[in-house]
Image (cartoon, rainbow, N blue to C red; front, side):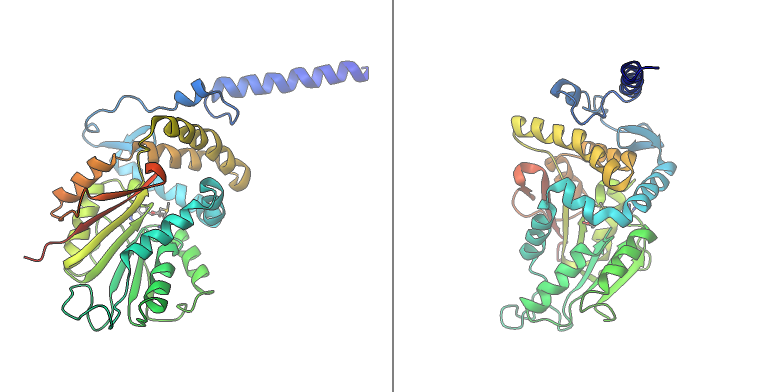
Length: 323
Ligand SMILES: C[S@@+](CC[C@H](N)C(=O)[O-])C[C@H]1O[C@@H](n2cnc3c(N)ncnc32)[C@H](O)[C@@H]1O
């Protein structure tokens, strides 16, 4: 066969392969045009999932299956989680987390926090970081308490359902001053049932980029209410709804077009990252989520949330009333 003939055969084979892939996965192409990107919009929202079912990204699954499927996603992404977070958010997740922690101002500063404050016991704060995975929030909390508030007592319990994510957190903790300190503890736990945490024992409950993965978000918020002391704070950093339509279109194109592709190239796992972007889309809006926090019994300061980067993410807060 001549060189020209073999080149044209190769080109036909490659094109055939691409066409077959496009037919199978029409929306997963990085270079997809905007109309393609729009087709990622989830099916019209039903007010509630059918009884016994929930969503796993855009897929409807039996409630009993979701935990297992989410577990598989995070076991798969655990070792590349940090690199992927940086690539997917262009490093912005670090700024959001810094802001989240700075704004909560963890730790008891004896000069500025008189001891009558419910968040300022002599022992420092007990912070529960749920879905704490790789320890990103916990390390920041401890750094802030130590360096800004000069508080060497505040401690963080990192709870996560996934042992692989916890392993990554423990590995990363070795490089921090808290590695063998009683100020940092890792526990395997489901946010929806925190039996090992006594009632009214926690000063600050945080959950960052975790709650959208829970099967029963309302049950998790009720557990947060139970474990917090009166006056204790629930604080959630999560992806949310972009409030400008043009920015939203650009953002959706980035997230649905690029993120699964980056997942495929960097982590060799497209499907997990496809789930991550779909789960963002399925998460309630700022007002819906604020109302869920209120329904659990929390008092909500101001409008109840702060948008970050035009609503790509938001911080929601609730305070457990002092009765
Ligand atoms: C996107 S990661 C967030 C990790 C970390 N908080 C951060 O901001 O980088 C989501 C985490 O939620 C955890 N998770 C999912 N469902 C959970 C549940 N029901 N209870 C506790 N953790 C859960 C996963 O195992 C995973 O570690």
